[in-house]
Amino acid sequence: MNSVTTTKTPIGRYFDVTGGRVYGHVREGDGPALVFLHYWGGSHRTWRPVIERLGPTQAFVSYDHRGWGESTGVPGPYGIEQLADDTERVIEELGYDAYVVVGHSMGGKVAQVLASRRPAGLKGVVLVAPAPPAPVGVTREFQEALAHAYDSDEAIDRSIDLVLTSGELSAETRRQVREDSSRAGEAARMAWPREALVEDFADRVGAIDVPVLVLAGSEDKVDPPHVLRDHLLPLIPTATLTELEGTGHLSPLEVPDRIASHIGAFAARLQDVVAGR
Image 1 (tube, rainbow, N blue to C red):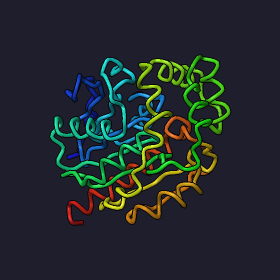
Image 2 (cartoon, rainbow, N blue to C red; image 1 turned 180 degrees about the vertical axis):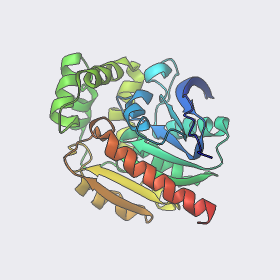
Image 3 (cartoon, rainbow, N blue to C red; image 1 turned 180 degrees about the horizontal axis):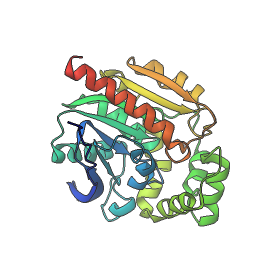
Image 4 (cartoon, rainbow, N blue to C red; image 1 turned 135 degrees about the horizontal axis):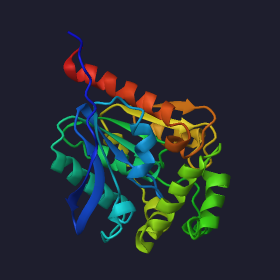
């Protein structure tokens, strides 16, 4: 008898966190479940092209950090510890007993802090163009310039073209990036460049005891591979880095097929370990 693969449709739902509720998309299915954390300027929609290229029965949750996307009404604080607390609440509400956290940029820093807590059920971490656990070469002038990166559509376009990408985004994807980048509440938008970016967790991430896959774009101007090799890999003993040729910081939007392939293979290896194969 031929087996039939049934694709489960993701559903939108809210999750209770301290001070309010965050919004996300969830799909039940095969584990380990994937927990997607977006970048500063993004939303759960950032991960959609990647999710669409994963297996049709892969379980996942992709949600908007407090202050972003459909979660703009959730008050601060918006620091990394709070965002990691929110992730734990989402995972707890979903009842995951085996999961992989996938964090992009700011979401990657959140993933590192969460993993350093060694939460129950965490089987692995994928860091996509992650911010290092401690700031590297950040000056006050840089922080102030970054704080204005999303001031207008014109500023967002400059950020996309000069900093965030290596290739062209489709008109639809560019429009999405503009919408997500400009939609955040003011306090959430300012929290990363002025506070969370310079939070230092270098003494914490060595506690991570699960496999960590780092995916770095060769053309990334924000968190380039050499910075991650020097300032992230030495601090996380379980981490390995794969460099993706020809892509920039927004690799989930630039090369979603390659990101999905690496995440899928990583999750499959972990599932084999869990199953004892």
